[in-house]
Image 1 (cartoon, rainbow, N blue to C red):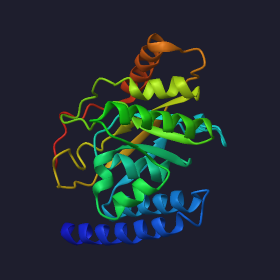
Image 2: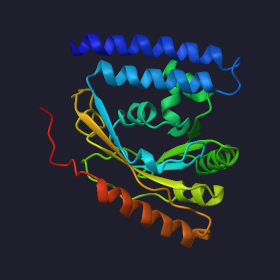
Image 3: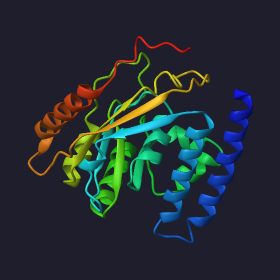
Image 4: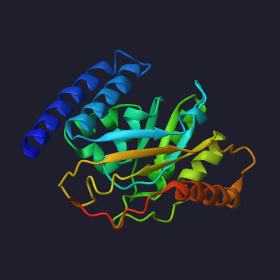
Length: 239
């Protein structure tokens, strides 16, 4: 049964990704791209029996764009956020994902921001691009730990997300993602359905932060906000 679900997921991902690629030259606003992405995310969650509950959506102002900063435990973090946060979010993703046939091509050609983690110069250039997009009226999401947790614990944050937030001057939204670690752990292909919880904290204004000191102060504040809601998943085991 699970194998059949995976086959269906691969086929539907290829179909929707192809549609997104063909619509990119036609729809310069990228509304269709975001719409297809949201449709894909909901399909993935439904197909694998994953439910998402969201707390704190009242903190988001309609029409305002943000830098969403979250923890990262599973590939299911991506569809959970895409399907549940009412915002067209430009995900900042690692370059390796763009190598996946069709799906990865859509990610690369679309409005998302690709980071080459192994090339500091290119990574810096990508963050500059992200800052330009945010200042131009778009939201972005970054995983502050840099990579998925391997043990279910909240990891230390890296400064890149906060340098971007300070540079753009856009409010930061701490976003806690709970219970995805047990669904699909890093390095595993076994999917275990579970309920995901997203907790949206109040946006933090960034105008009063500047320089490295300000970035580190903001990083500490956001880490504390996420840790306050984070459910340590290190003791959770798959059924």
